[in-house]
Length: 229
Image (cartoon, rainbow, N blue to C red; front, side, top):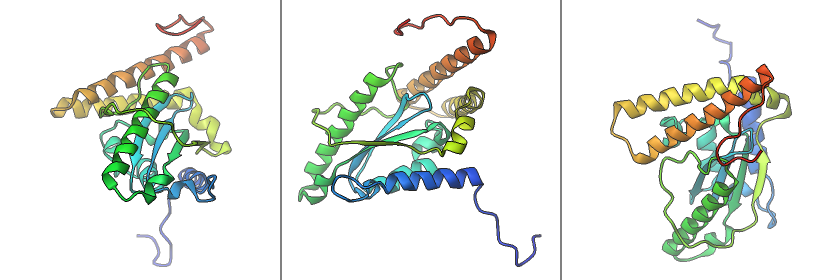
């Protein structure tokens, strides 16, 4: 047993540094002077180290709370089900919906938020070279709307970025996530969306492994379907 006067260890230094960076991003002031993380209503997107969008979500409980739950603990279905590995998230983009906080009709606000999420979803699909993100649930089609200004930032400190971005580290993490997700699928009745997520993760792993192989072997990679030379 540790001595009675010895304080318990906190989280590892790299984890603490990333959490600090997340807080700093969420404390960024918006055009109205308010911290973006304090917007009660909003939409967010996560990006990996290749700039690939990997997840889209919405919240009406505060961007800070929702994003922090995704990235700093296991209290979201996406993380608990091995759909989203927080280790993969390098950048966050948020669309605070400040105007929804003053609307009297919650149903109207929710409808607008759903439209904003669908608009962001379509926006990131166009940016994705896979034409897909890792969301296990379908984002219901809705009328597109003009999005408010977004803010995007990196949540990985400079001193950790190259280590976390290393392809071998990411391949190992991605393979572990796929194995855990496949186990979940094998043990219960799951949605079509979860199987779609598994396929997308497998495609992402294959591309990263191919890129690493050609980098090490010095060979020229073949062009994947849908990609430009």
